[in-house]
Image (cartoon, rainbow, N blue to C red; front, side):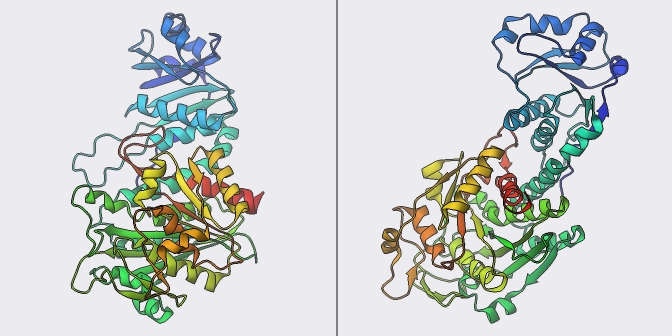
Length: 488
């Protein structure tokens, strides 16, 4: 796994500032008042911080903005970052600030003179998340993100407050590594092996191979992968930290590469389909987080791992396949494969674990991108309570999501004249009909949400908390949902 940024929580110790190398960050209040750390740096650097604060640029800066002093006299540091401090009760703003510090820091060491700031754990989380660098397949890997010393008046308390955030950060790194990995590396075998390795963290991990999937009747999932040399699998991860209670279930689509199958995708952009296992990657990251922080909850994560390829054995438009539930599905488009995978894993999760609720995640439809772009994931489901709880968790963690409609009227679009249902109703209401399809495989008494993360799992440009590529969207919010629902 990609190494996380080296974060340390140290005592303030202003007496050694002159010898600190790399970059130093100091805080100045919006009214121009210098913090103790800023005053100490200002004294050593001949009033450089005061000159920044007196400038027109600083006066017009917003809370959380940075101004730089390069090669300040009187200091061994190459850079002083002057932060216009804002309120300390806004986690999203603090994480964004941490992200800005990570970008400004580059590969040099960074010392943050935080003093008595109460938002240091969120600043640390932002630093770690934005400091992620995926270099597994580069011959010139460049330099790692530099180490960070967060100097606090209460370093032990700050370190304790940051523990959960660092567990979530590791889960997000794990998700990003999975989503960023190329399809010839992250095969179904490799994916399953990476998940099995999490047994070392205390997860129970079980891999269901094709013979077992056939015995269970997972004809929909197996149809998707039958044109590939990569064996289809289902991986079950259990975290049992909540006693004897029934578990909450997370289900992820894990298409390690999606050509579209016989309904082959256009060549332009097909290379991005290495991220079509984003739902499974997010489930894996959440399960890692729960294990790392020893969550007092019972959660089971299930992922269906397949590769969708065109081949003489591949399933075809017009085929009829039979799901584990027993429903028959007319295949209209072999590129609407993710819902076939999820249908069987959803049914298996309910049949075996009798969960208190279930959330599935998938990079499912291009229609979701058209509807919401890259800023929000689509939230569908049969439970207002679960959807509202999840949206509240998203809001608390700064992850964009939006409730989408469902209803029986949309079922007409996927009615089949030869089978129980079609796997695609075409372009009209494409993300909704996909959710309606999945809803057929959820029992009436099971609270369920479907998250279409087609636009949020990976980005073509950097964000406040992630470089270009995989974002790890959903790990923060799902971890928060589980904590709020089962551990509060």
